[in-house]
Every structure is written in C-alpha cells, then in structure tokens.
Length: 350
Image (cartoon, rainbow, N blue to C red; front, top):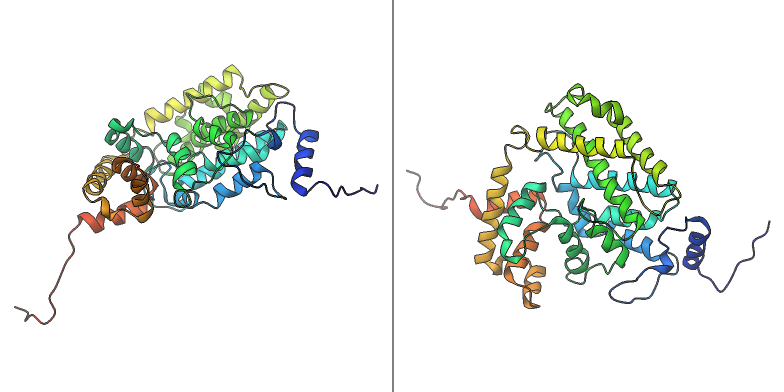
C-alpha cells in the first residue's frame, strides 16, 4: 500500500498524531502538554517529551550521577550500583510498564532519568546533613532539589525549561506524593522496585545479608531471586493497571513490597558495617558548608552568579554542595582541610 506524504505535517506532528492512534486514552499526549515556563520554538522532529528526555540525558547533573553513592559509600568493586545505574534501572522498569500499558514512554523516561538529579554526594547521608544544616531555609529534600536543578541550576542558571508534566513527575516521585500523570505514577513505583531489589542484590554481594535470610513470607509472594522479584512486581502492576485510569498493585504484592522495604531499613540501611562511615560523611558536609559560608568568594562562578541575582549565600552554598559528586567532595575537603607538606628550595638540610 502506497502512503501519501502530507507536506503540511512535519515529523514531530506525525509522531504526535501516532500517539493519539496508538496510546491508551488515559495516556499523556505530547501535544496536550501544559507546556514550559518559557515558550520556545518546537522541534520539527521530536515531541516535547522526547526533547525533555534528551535535555536531561545531556545535562551535567546527569553525568555527575555516575560518581554519586546509591547505598554503599565508595564500595570496593565494579558491580555495586551508583546513583546513575540506579536511575537507568528505574528508567528501564518504568519504560517496560509504560509500553505494556500503552502510556507515553517518552514522558516516562524523561521523568525517570531526571528524578534523582538533585541527590547529594554520599546518598541519604549527605541529604540528612544538608537537611539538618538548612532547617532555617526550609530544609533539604532531594526531590525538590531535582526540580531546582532542572529549573534553575543547569545551563549556568537558565535551567532546562522542561515541560510541566516532567517536572511534576520529578517532584512527586516520593512515596508521600501523587504525580498528576499515570507516567509519573509509574516512575514513582518503579523507583521503589529498582532500589529495593538492587539494594538487596548489593547487600548480598557485600555479605551484609544472605538471600535465605529474607523473610520467607515475603519471598514466597515476590520471588526467591532478584530477577523473579522484579518480574513479579512489574507484571503485577501491569495486570492491575491495564485499562484503568490509575497505576496500582494487588494488595498482597504491594504489602509484601513495602514490608521488604522495611526489612532493608532494619537490616541494611542502618547496618553498622554498611553504614559505619556515614557519620564521617555528615561531618565532612557540615565542615564544607561552614567553610563556604565564610568564604563565599571561593564558590564556583555559576554559584556566585546566583548570589548576584538575589539568591541567599546559604542557598547558593547548599546548591554547590548538593551538586558535588562523592569524589569531588572528598578531594575538595582534602584540599581545604588537610595540611600539605612543604619544603624550601636551597635551605641546607640539617
């Protein structure tokens, strides 16, 4: 069958038309987005959600995730997750679910890739430290910081100018929040599916727990291996959300997943072997903050620009530290806080 080309429609518009033909009625359609804070000319090839995905992927904040802690601080081994590999696992789980439910895969991926851009160095230990330090500013939450990254900090203060739907999904990936789109709800659950299973896998690899120590009443429901648990959780969401206007799980599987999450809090996230270095991290973050509060002129130019544009020095210092990778934070701390050896050329040795 010969298809007649429509010279009046560009490739982006044809993709938008295909979305309406293929996606489920409850999907988020790119041509119905609530738009961006700043209007801009649309791409003639990519939809708005595809552009958002690409902007996140090419951002500096995304690249820094490869050197940020997921759970274990600076682990010795190549196979432990980092914040970037966690993000990629979230995106893959979320895309699988979105595709099966005929929802917008591009929007889902954009939210998933951006959901942790605001995470601090050293994972939740760094987040706790910054939250404690900045109570007078309203505290620190990584999901809110992720939105700040894409709206304010990237591209030397211009931000990425993402669509409203992507920013909503990034902000509301936390358990206590409910995203406005089904795609955002998929990412919210996919985040938990990813970190629960990967954290178990990493903890087993580290010798913190064993597979046979996981509560049998939970593994009998979810599966007795990482792969089987992932398969159970993804399939359960698809089965119970198909032809629905919500993203949901069966009561038994959902209860088992959150109970397993609590098991991780009790046996991994507070384990003294796995978390023995975290107090040092918190002290380091606090000392870096104090140093830069009293030496604001030492901040990078992009953060000095924030202050010149009216941001408080406290917020700018918080942004600076939150953006750091683990390695950068350690090296900077050594440079500032650790005395260097010295010698004078020409002085007779005695």
